[in-house]
Amino acid sequence: VEKFQGILPAFYACYEDNGEVSVERTKALVRYFIEAGVQGLYVNGSSGECIYLSVEDRKQILEAVMAEAKGKLRIIAHVACNNTKDSVELAKHAESLGVDAIAAIPPIYFRLPSYSIAEYWNTISAAAPNTDFIIYNIPQLAGVSLSKELFMEMKKNPRVIGVKNSSMPVQDIQNYKAWGGEDFVVFNGPDEQFIGGRTMGACGGIGGTYGAMPELFLKMNALLKENRMEEARKIQFAVNEIITLLCSGHGNMYAMIKEVLKLRKGLVVGSVRSPLSPLTEADLEIAKKTAKVIDETV
Ligand code: NAY
Image 1 (cartoon, rainbow, N blue to C red):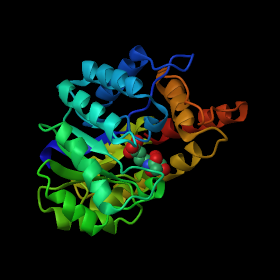
Image 2: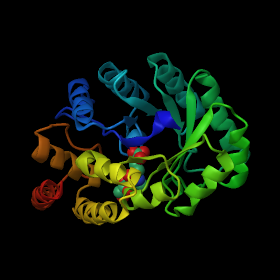
Image 3: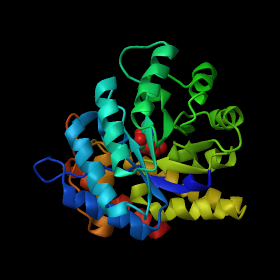
């Protein structure tokens, strides 16, 4: 559990202006996170637009991240590709780079029985035999939730050390901790209830909006460690207003966050990949307002 405490931003895909993966911009974003003082990164997950990236893109991104971050940040590589073969390839690749753990969502589109999902996850995990495995539970997007039956089946695999839980009931965190045992790692997924998840037993958080305002999540986490709940709650409420702003444009939320990074830190990491929508002219005004609100809050 020690190893995976704290704030692990979900890493964003960084593109050149022509939409191809940018190695240089990826490295610059890693340096930004190191300077911010976060504990780790969750690479090629939802916020990393994984379902719109090729296997090659994903390898290139992880290689660039590891080149900057190795030894400085805990790196969890999300390797699920919706088919076992490509996921296995990414798991092997991630292990060869020395990541701290790999993670995977269940396969999407077809509703598979639990035993097929377990087989999929265990096959991926077996491809990286020296690497810890983290289950990514995100029922609202994947269409399957991590049941007790599936959890218990996965617990038989000694490499399964944790769950990144993005379901909305915070009670799920309590259950996964209870079923997993003392050393089992559970991450809070929904940024809007970070303090709720931590209070229910999450050892840290992995989140898609952390990158826009890492200072605020680090602060909340530090306050919680000192049992300063009132102050943590104040920040959480401010964060939730910021998240509402980030989601209020016509363009995709990650495009908005990338614009905010440009405004706040001068970081240029491109926009988002189609079919996600880029920002409109009107969205640029929202981004300016959001960046200002964040700067005033930190
Ligand atoms: C990932 O895999 O990139 C994440 O960890 C992202 C988790 C995010 N959940 C979703 C559904 O995208 O951080 C949350 C989310 O962006 C945040 O709560 C704002 O709604």
